[in-house]
Length: 355
Ligand SMILES: NC(=O)c1ccc[n+]([C@@H]2O[C@H](COP(=O)([O-])OP(=O)(O)OC[C@H]3O[C@@H](n4cnc5c(N)ncnc54)[C@H](O)[C@@H]3O)[C@@H](O)[C@H]2O)c1
Image (cartoon, rainbow, N blue to C red):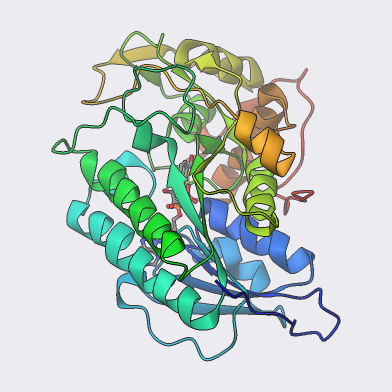
């Protein structure tokens, strides 16, 4: 597995990096971070769930290029590459279930195409996998060695099994010595630029509180999740890409703090002045009851751990959504009010991920 040496700026520091899914929530923060660090970025995205707004500030950057393409039909890339990140895939259940066959194909054909590109360019590869590969876990917290409890025929399988198959492709290419592939198992990540309508728990609760709608909690609300701020995650992804001795297996990236959904809803209600009440709905099929990463491996290999406390990250995300809703065509009567005792973080900003 020879890796390409050299740099586009001649001093060894500027790498040429392709980010598939770079117009999405996490991908756009990654593009920001890579450009800030002096690299050249090609963003490939079909804008299925991504948003051009996320990358609009980057389009005139001399080291940024956007290719609107589906990774299932990836065209040739006419310049050298040192690194490829694969984040292309709808990530929220409502979006990935809307066209489940395309989701599965994105995971398999898309990942296969990107691995072939990385092989051809001798580029290192990071795959954005997911804690969903653990399914509804019977082991808690989840270590990388846990093989998971996934239903391969249910409505979530297009994503869960697609991501598992994508991991298989990565590790086969690695064992065959064809690609220096690394796999991050990402746990629930939140922050500015989440889509307001994609049904993910953090964005759901915040938007509902800001617009005075009832906060929907599925099931009793006693199921748990862990929440990692996107800036922390970006530090983890870049550390995994750049660590000299590549791990031979997947690496969990997430925040080991564990909260019930009821606790999360309470924190949101403390941050927003709202008339919202709580509304309970039936638990979706195959919804995991507990989720918490064991990040011992990431701590040891990457010297990485999340830094942003949930309350602080949530306040920042509430402010981002408040500004977003003010800009959009939300009716004025439904516009958010904020608690006077909460510090305002200001209008949406580009994050400094500190990686
Ligand atoms: N956000 C999380 O909590 C989380 C957790 C675990 C794993 N992940 C993984 O991280 C990655 C990014 O997630 P996100 O939250 O930013 O989601 P997102 O939906 O905001 O981003 C995904 C991006 O991929 C693009 N895309 C989808 N299918 C594509 C295709 N066939 N060809 C080209 N582009 C395509 C979308 O348009 C979008 O811009 C995903 O692979 C997801 O599985 C995210």
